[in-house]
Length: 385
Image 1 (cartoon, rainbow, N blue to C red):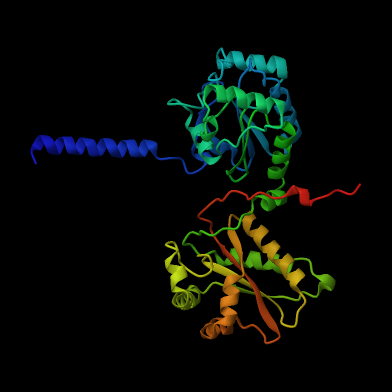
Image 2: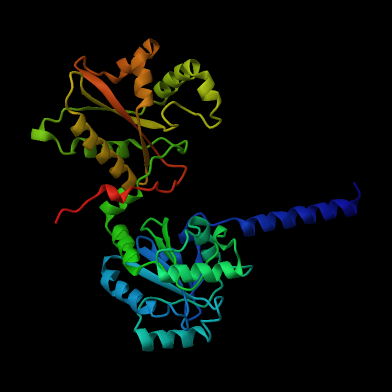
């Protein structure tokens, strides 16, 4: 290779490295910096621990009166930890004209807003704010509510411009909102036509740590190769045995497995007995949904205690969610362990008394996925008044 070719090769490699570094996405919302209405750089890490509602706004839009509703939410929930971050954007019908100072004066005079406003940005296209690029990647367009007149109008307008508009994650119009949890997860996207009562319900959910844990919990099937610290497992065990129990009978036994060799050994047996199934799963690590730790819950062999044990498991899973851990309730491994004579060594290690039986297993570990919630059938609920 000539000297010139080598030089060109090095330059291309260096340029590629720089481009990769520039394109490297932020790991979470707190990695971003934004410019406020005074021209100062603000790190979103300043908002750690807060519930955030990030909004792109405009001052001459049919949805502009939402400023009043947003300020009402801010006044109502600010003391509980809500922050509304307002980013004016002139990309939709040029409905946010003027400087950020003029926009701020308009909003203060007409809607008495007190939540922070930031410099004007683009939310779509080549010059889109990296923050909004990240938000869109986390929560794509979910569709307009076609049962609502405004939703139908927006849908018709968008289809006239692009029949395939719904396939894109782009922001569709002013006053699109992203709800961010206290730990930085982008949990919900609201379109401008969504009811503000729904936005408020989402805010209430995230402000309440118990409700947030309940609504945020998912069954996790991908885990990091990182065992859970003993101290955290102790907390989960304490939460388990503090579950409600009829007449305080506590008809359960709990076994927390930290022994990685034990998990590996029984997994090898499972692999041998279920080779075809294992070979179909390229990500297979162990028989407990690849979790590094498991919690085994036992109930009396002659029956009874199942309800109490179920409540115990829910305590464990919600506590784990609140601690940044993932869980999955497992039945398949229980059936294998009970049916397979060669797995006796594992059952013996659990030290389960003869008058108890293994009921279910909870996989627990640090999650390596963030699955979306599966739909729930609200029609199953009736209110008797």
